[in-house]
Image 1: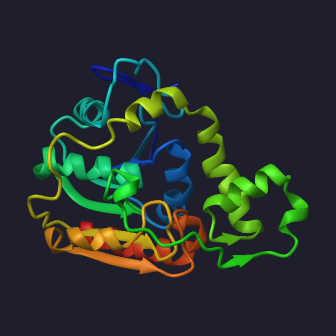
Image 2 (image 1 turned 90 degrees about the horizontal axis):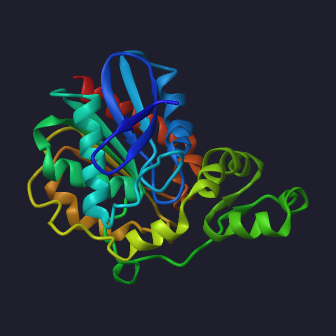
Length: 269
């Protein structure tokens, strides 16, 4: 198995393709499969990109992370990963939820190395009580779905899902659930108690091509808080998609892939 040894963790990663590097960072609790599941369909349509999908400390197959105490040190592990895997190279970044927070931390620390940024349902405000969130709403539920799932599976899926149908269930089951089952919950609870960085992010303008995708029905990280950082990203497309919650990438896959494809076009210009 491929591991990258950093100062405070051994990060598992998967590498695909050749060309310009892009580092893809999943959210809190899942693993790299969340990102490869939504991004590999895009890269099947284009060549020239070296994709690095990593597992954050405490998630997936990463190991040796017990000394990490907070989000600053989570970020430090990822920065070490970048220095080992991409020494002196520039790269694009894509981050989902907490991975989007880590991506903004990377930009704050190494702005000169980042050629583009994609944020998918990003965590803008670390403390949930301080977020502006819509109520959880299910837009569509397939009439026969309940017969295919156990009551426990349906309750878990419905707790965050906005579109509940066989397609979204299959992707949720394959791309999100397996990583969640591997998560080190006591470790993640420790980090969540020190969730915010000790330094400010979004203080300097990021003038490279970006995209921020948010779900109109996202009751986890919301969408309204993202507009508070809009002016710091003058070349970033902000898109708020209806019929999409915190699993936007599987609930609006065609729009997701089209918008990510257009962002990559801009990074390549």
